[in-house]
Image 1 (cartoon, rainbow, N blue to C red):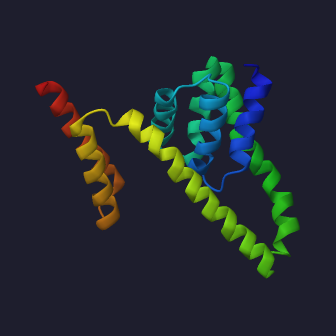
Image 2 (image 1 turned 135 degrees about the horizontal axis):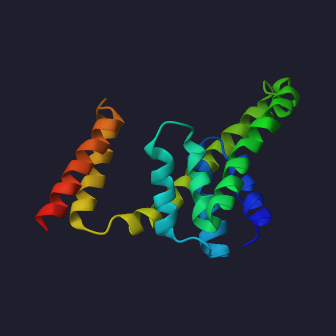
Length: 172
């Protein structure tokens, strides 16, 4: 895959998302399913690497670029991630005056709902690839419940899951 094509595909994913992970369906469709230069496992690893540290949610795009083409691919991913920021100022200026119109608000709501549906549809194959044992399934379910029903910080849920996973690996 050429670096220009990689940049354009990652730019499409970055530019069409409202937050970082809503670009996941686009990345998966283009790089995993269509061009087959990335696997679901590598995409999972890229998302984990992007979320492991502080920073924007879309930072995983840099890891995706790295998995596809090494350091030059990571640079393409970074460039694709920051390009929309340079384009948003003129767009906000143009659309800002029109945002109060009912049709514009309805369009924004529709696109937001469609993006949520795409993220949910992409999560299923990635979860299938990541959840490979009963312990992993239990950790995923418990983590979801804790995050959905309590005010426990995400960091503590991740740390607890990591500890249980390490302990299960040592005992196996």
